[in-house]
Length: 288
Image (cartoon, rainbow, N blue to C red; front, top):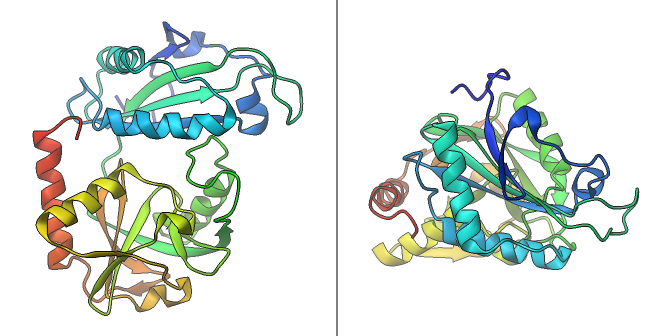
């Protein structure tokens, strides 16, 4: 299945039922559509049968939903929904998305009283290149904002930033935060090597607690690579020795250049060790 083929008739899971994409309906008054009152998770299935790291994604989905007062279906129901959608759409590898919106509400910020809409959908996962060019963007993350650490459907900042990156020939946009420190990519976490230190922004920077980020940190701890979770000035980013991105779809992906400045060591020994260990994990454990 071609992810760009708009004629493909995907099947999805909507509020407990399997429906065809063209038959799926939610109200135009849905609060997720109107205000971004919703949360989501993007997962990957390497075998087209089960999603990878489902338990970690579900845990984060629950944490994201709580401040919005959104109910998350029980684990078994969502797991079965994911597997049913994967089986019906038959894509390998598959990109899988669980979305929960607040349901019908008034035309404003106030919430309604209707039940949530829960959607599980999938498509072919795009092939990722071995490395990416990135740019820093002039927009900043507010590390003290109400949505810090939550994966919400309020993705407008990411849409604008990624479009800017693409217009400049880059594949990812890197945000600083209000304090002027490195934060994250539009859909990824970032690790850098500077003066011999492997560094990633701490969660207090406002970055999303990425599932692949957490797995990379655990791998580093297991194989004896020290990672410093410390603040790093975003203005110094083009002077780093090497860097890489982590995300569900990218996995562990080296950065080729930042703001047009090539990195001296695109794939360091530590990077290769981390990437190889992650690949072994993917092959050996479906729900690490």
